[in-house]
Image (cartoon, rainbow, N blue to C red; front, side):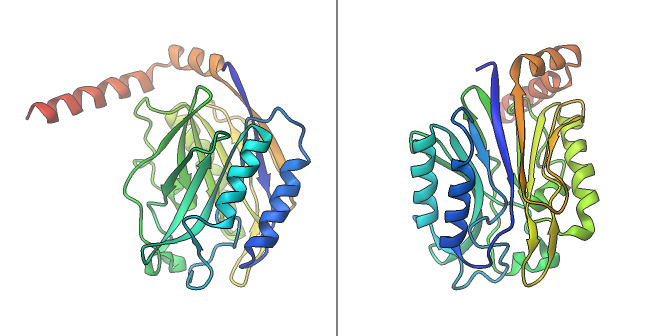
Length: 265
């Protein structure tokens, strides 16, 4: 695929009400014409950012995940967003990427938000996850991961990074600046989706945007309002850019050589 159409949904979230939130997301996705390849939803879109997940987190085979599968198949698209999940007695902030054929890939958030107490209840993920969908390689990241550039360093293994978040209003300018920084330093597209509205603890003003490898904003939602941003990922343009500035290719070769040396030992 030479280009991919992505819709970033900036929405409010009903606190701890998966049924209401799923119904609302279903309505928003259905409002768009066929032809969108990927819809991206905010962090913990079915419940809100609950740092005390007991009694709120969903199972690993929840109605929310079943809806994502059904909707992806219905629209012949992928749907991505994170959900609070309880599995084998542990809680995870799990970023699902659901393919239209029903295949599900996920990433468990690595960097838990200690200031908000997320680390006291959730188990941190340990593996980076890159998803290949229709010829575009996506790195899956969640909220606070944005502040850790080494974790998202492009090893020549992805074309776009997706950050889903519940990033509070007082620090939204940091969110916007870091999205641009990650795009520039990793020579990739960055898709950042943040919610709006309030929960019992914080207020959120959005800052949802698609950024190109030059750090330019391709599309963005208005601050403090629900809406969507439409972004086109142009793979030919990305490849041409990387050919002019071959930093990522050098990085890929470095990691390939390093892995080879480690295995030889």
